[in-house]
Structures are given as C-alpha cells and as structure tokens.
Length: 228
Ligand code: ATP
Image (cartoon, rainbow, N blue to C red; front, side):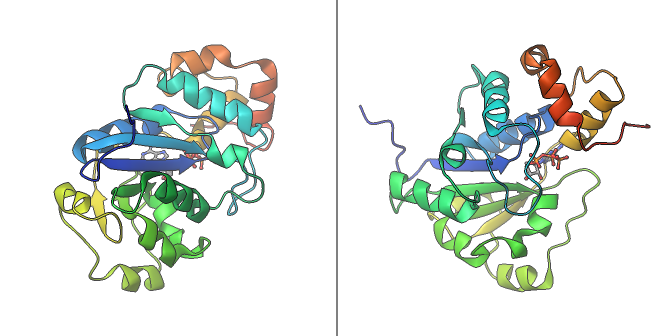
C-alpha cells in the first residue's frame, strides 16, 4: 500500500534549529496540522542553518530530541533530510526534494513563525519557495509581524483566507494563522539552563530526561543566564 498522500491531503513542513525542541514548536505543529487538515507535518531539524550560527549542540542530538518529543504523536513526523545533506540547510532544497517525492499535485505548506517570516526575504531563492509550496505565517508572542517591503509586495495578491483554499492548489499562496500563543523560545530555555534553573513545562519530559551534562554544556556555551 502506498503511503503517499493524495493531492487532496496536504503536507506541512516545519523547520528549525530546535536547540532544544519545546512545547511552542509542538503546539504549532499540532494546531496547524488540525486546522489545515494536513495529512502530516514534517519536523525538519536544520543541520547547518545558513542565517545564524550553527548551534553548538550536534545536529544528531537535536534530531534525537525531536524524535523523543514527538514519539507517538500521530501525524508529526521527524524528517532528517537536512541532517543527511552536506552544505548549508537551504529550505529551497528541502522543498524541492519533497516536491519530487510527493509529486506535482500534492499541496505542501511551509509553516513559519513570525521571526522566521520577517527574515524570509534573506533566504536562498526565497521567491521560488512559492513555486514549491504554500507558506503559512504563524503569530509568535513578542514577535510582531514585520515583513520586509520586498516580501510584502511579493505577497500581494497571493493571500488566501482559509485553509481549504490552500489545499486546492499545490503551491503559490500564503495565509496567516493565529494559534493560542505560547511564549516559549529555545533561547530562554538555554538561558534558564545556564542559570541552573528548571525547564520543566517548557520542554517535553522525555527530552529533559535525556539531557546529559555534555548537552547542557553545549546548549549553554554562548548564552547569558536568565535574569527573569
Ligand atoms: P531560538 O530561541 O534559538 O531562536 P526558537 O525557539 O525560535 O529558537 P527555532 O528552532 O529557531 O526555535 O524555531 C523554529 C520555528 O519555530 C520558527 O519558525 C519559529 O518562528 C517557530 N517558533 C518557535 N517558538 C515558537 C512559539 N513559541 N510560537 C510560535 N512559533 C514558534
């Protein structure tokens, strides 16, 4: 039996450094999978993020945490393609690979929080991402939506208001989605760890239990301790 989706179901793609993965990430993926009625959301840890310093934590550890965090969560699938690839982890390449796998008719939606969306105009071949997928911009606490002028003008005329409209085409449109906000960031988790404080409730317990001294050292190396 084929596991490939029909064109009427959709594939969500959610990338990040996930250093570490937290409940803000997980809720985004769960909520959008349900709202957009996606067949599955692929969680894609980045190996060599082109736009920020690579995390000190090795990609394999970040991948392992994502697997622990999402074990048993139907429809959320950890995808290691960026970690298997060499060179910069360009989203364009990831989407091109997925398009080749799922075929020209399958709707694919790239899910982005506001901070990532605000930087989209700096990404490799960013305009061509819309040839490969739809984009879904998700509100993020403390991150106002501030698309660069060139992105804002490119987006004009491509917006759809409802998930159903996204699934009618394979790529090329965008929508804004708001979900109940969770003000969690990996940065704050690293800062709490640096201060020797608890991260319970922010990160899945299975991930917390797997943290070795070496992981905490790598996560906190370049961080200032949390003061709040
Ligand atoms: P860091 O603090 O290290 O930048 P992060 O918490 O922003 O990490 P990333 O791995 O950089 O996590 O983010 C991956 C994606 O998840 C991005 O699109 C980001 O906008 C989104 N995201 C992260 N946290 C949240 C959150 N709490 N709510 C909504 N989106 C989020």
